[in-house]
Image (cartoon, rainbow, N blue to C red; front, side, top):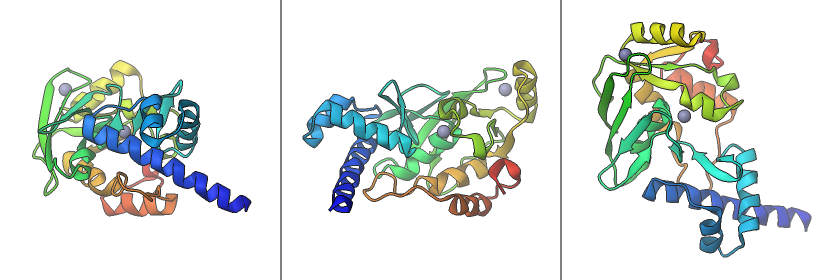
Length: 228
Ligand SMILES: [Zn+2]
Ligand SMILES: [Zn+2]
């Protein structure tokens, strides 16, 4: 009996998760707990409790019970905008911004825009599903995978795209950060392409660490930064 009740709760939390993701996908913004409660036929207190459980399971990120992120979507600016034909998103980080066209049915390619954190130069790419966008820029990720969830908003805020390696070095000197991991745009696109597959659909399960490691290897990442 107890087991049956727990299973029911899990199904309801999944309804909330899917509602959050679909709202972000179609409107570009996070739904308020009150809107979720109305849509799902429950009260706001219940919706908030479910959001807290989803946050504990790393499906969403909350700040004071407000939705901040549901990867790859973000309710706050983290250096990127992503423009589709009918929706505009805060792109989260470099990884998340490049992932959005792979997830949204009606948006097979999007305009991703950012500025180099070192020199402020503007950069933009049309990112689609079939091949990586051309460009000699590089992505620099500051926080190793083992610590990405220590402060996920900080982590995503420091997964940025720079003009070239020299701008990464300049930024590391300016900010006194240790070097993280640098990859080209092709590797970033491959990383983003399948990472969030299925996340808009009911029944999604996050990858276990071993499956994540296999994915990172397959897309061409290497070394202890990725837990490999
Ligand atoms: Zn630069
Ligand atoms: Zn991110």
